[in-house]
Amino acid sequence: MLTAPAHDSNERKGRAESRKDRTRNGDGIDTLILNGRIFTGDSDHPWCQALAIRDGLVRATGSNEAMAELAAAETHIIDVGGRTVIPGFNDAHMHHTPDPYGVRLPVDPVANPSFEDIRPWIEEAVASTPVGTWIYATMGERLINDKRLDRLSLDPIAPKHPIIFLGMTNHTNVVNSAAMERLGIRDEEPDPLGGFFERLPGSRRLSGRINEYAQWSPQRCFASMATLEEGVASLHNLAAECVRWGITSVQNMSWTPPERYVEMAKAADLPIKLRVIRFPPTGPEGRILSEGRGLARHIGDRLEVHGTKWILDGTPIEGAAAIGRPYVPDSDNVGRENFSPSEIPHMLRESLGADEQLLLHAIGANTLESVLDALETSHHAVDWAERNLRIEHGDGLTKAQVARVKVLPLTEN
Image (cartoon, rainbow, N blue to C red; front, side):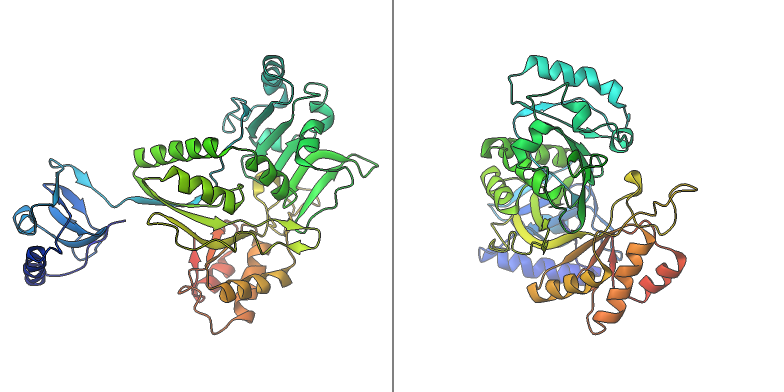
């Protein structure tokens, strides 16, 4: 992103003169943008006509004439013809994950179709592809919450085609028996910390409905089936879409294991900046902290690995955000916290020890209460704003909690 320094006209003239001298010494401006309406992001000087760039940073702003004086023979000059120029956007919350080979059903989660609506698409995919071909889709709210959608309803339609339906909120998945076999999910699979497998009534047999951190390992297994070439192609498509919308940097929490995702990103050599945020799984014994720890933080000019995200509760769409009150009258569902409140101080200490950013998904008021309690009681001397702690979403903040947040040095996203 490009931001210009604040300075008055005299300072601007002085800076231009000093840069003009450096240009003569071969340390000059490599790019000039001229003849534009350029938004700088500087509250004192929000707009300018032209700007000068060296080594990817804005070095000076001003008129066409003043900036043109900084040009050297090798300077690349871009005349934008009076167009508006703004800094590139940063997408701070993305879950880009390349898909392996298979059939993606044309399910629009916003249109929110029912199981009956999509059944013909499943049947067509089964009939038109070889046995063993993956069939997958993104579920809307109706499919996420339709308890009839499970392995028993999918197996007769696709006995030999693995099916995985991914909830649009990334908090509930549905798989059939063929997918369970391919992903290594056993009927006696124990629940991991922070997640649970739904089971058929009166038995320990899995229903194929998978929630919260029970998804992580299977979904990682599915994502890892994408080839390097498929990953590179997916990343190129992502970058093209980002550039089309003016997004020049992305912070991504992928279901693909970070080592594999970095391999794909290095091979893709994207024109945008990509930050890979660790998104670790859990097991029956607890959170898995080793994932991605062997990766360097800076991998080239446009690829970085930094930060860890934990999901502390679900969302209201599947009734899993811990809101602390019944979702509907006469119901005992108040949502659930994925981790004990005593686990959050450990996450805080781990981020300090690793000297990296911590991101905490917290939506329900009860979950946010646990986060605020941990921040208020565990680390009074830590400037969390300085460390860029992020509370992701925070939809359920109460007025009382907002008042507490205001006196804590936090970044809310």
